[in-house]
Image 1 (cartoon, rainbow, N blue to C red):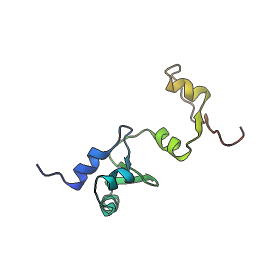
Image 2: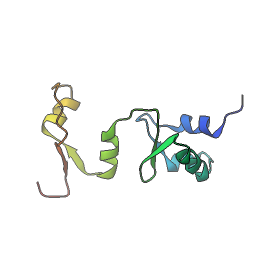
Image 3: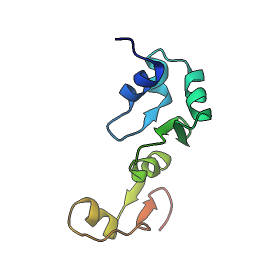
Image 4: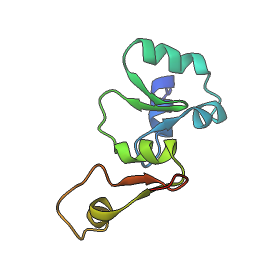
Length: 100
């Protein structure tokens, strides 16, 4: 069985549902393939170096955390992530490098 570049890309998707450019290049797949699948609408560029497949639903908090490495989920959001609340509060993310 011969794998296509698309099959190879799907195998590189991390547990969090996202595909990272560094994983693609480390696997020996050319970046031009990413561009091709972007142009075809198969991939979506979520952030610099981070992609997802158009038909997938991924956790946006992974992207938020990747953009702000020192960010902290607090209050209701933290309770939600720890299974201590059934309510979700999207504004409870703080950049720990800035004053609250």
